[in-house]
Image (cartoon, rainbow, N blue to C red; front, top):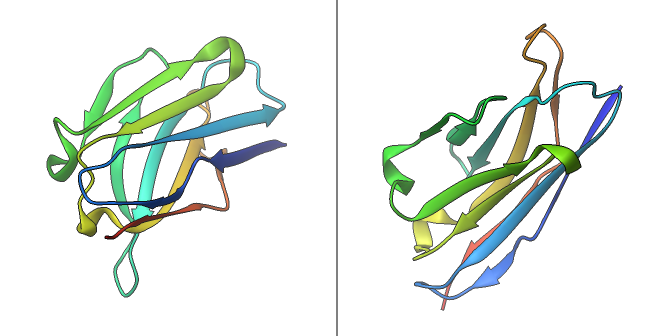
Length: 118
C-alpha cells in the first residue's frame, strides 16, 4: 500500500507564493508518475501539473510561467512552487501518484487548502 500526504497549503495574498509538498511512502520500489490537481468550490477537479517518473512535465495553461513542479526521487517527494498567486488559484490541492508499471495502482492524498485572498 502507498500513502500520499500533502503539506504546505495556507492563506496568501494575491501575488504571493507558496510551496506545496507531496510525500509518498509505503510499498514504493520505483519513481511514480506524480501530479497535482485542484478543486475549487462548485467546480470539477482539474489537473494543474504532472511530472513523469523520468522527469517530464506538463502544465495547465492557467499556471504556466507561475507554477513549477520538481521531484526528489530519493525522498519520494514532489514539490509545487506557486508564484504570482491569483484569487482563482484558490482551491483544495490534491497530490496523485501512479505506478508507471501498472496504472491501475494509483493513490490520492487528502488534499491541502490554498486560499489566495487579501
